[in-house]
Amino acid sequence: QKEVEQNSGPLSVPEGAIASLNCTYSDRGSQSFFWYRQYSGKSPELIMSIYSNGDKEDGRFTAQLNKASQYVSLLIRDSQPSDSATYLCAVPSSGGYQKVTFGIGTKLQVIP
Amino acid sequence: GAGVSQTPSNKVTEKGKYVELRCDPISGHTALYWYRQSLGQGPEFLIYFQGTGAADDSGLPNDRFFAVRPEGSVSTLKIQRTERGDSAVYLCASSLRGRGETQYFGPGTRLLVL
Image (tube, rainbow over all chains, first blue to last red; front, side, top):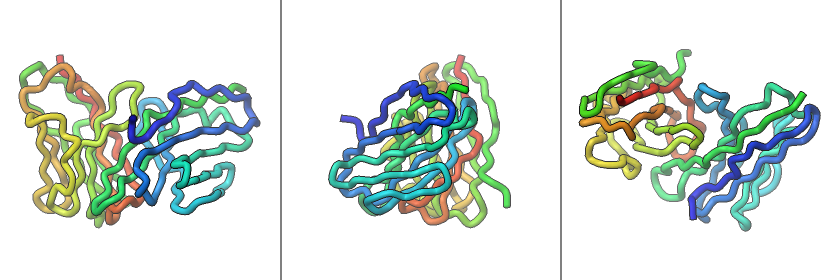
């Protein structure tokens, strides 16, 4: 079992729709969770971080965390063509120094 | 302030050669990470520095890979006897204190081994 799992996609949504991106992780002790966006040929940039169970909203983005189910998701409302990118889920491991494991990334395509 | 910088941006080398990749983190960031990213994959963890010491080097694939951060700032990733399978984008990231905080990525070095 991979430590951080994501569906590689592509996930295609029409402009203006809600895009839902999912991630599961194996380390039950993990305490922080990150979503990064990566445009083709560019390096990852942080979109959202979440530490507590429940929802965290920032503009059009909402991160959802369920530690019991070891599941974290990212919702993008009113999707725009500029949101087309690969979305990476990143999970630091539990323990002292926290190696960070990334998922394979989900490629999102927003169709105008 | 300046972000994370990496040099060179591109490196082409021949199989068997030695290469060095450099990362200059954000000033004041104590944590520095190296990742390798192949096409269609997420970043693969290589090594994590906290200050001058390698806190976790469990991601280094074999003893041909080595990294240093002698003064707790700039880091160099060294690859000996390069192989074609080493071709990838090598990403460096830094964070203020590590411990699961936000990482800021450099632009990466694209390594091609012929």
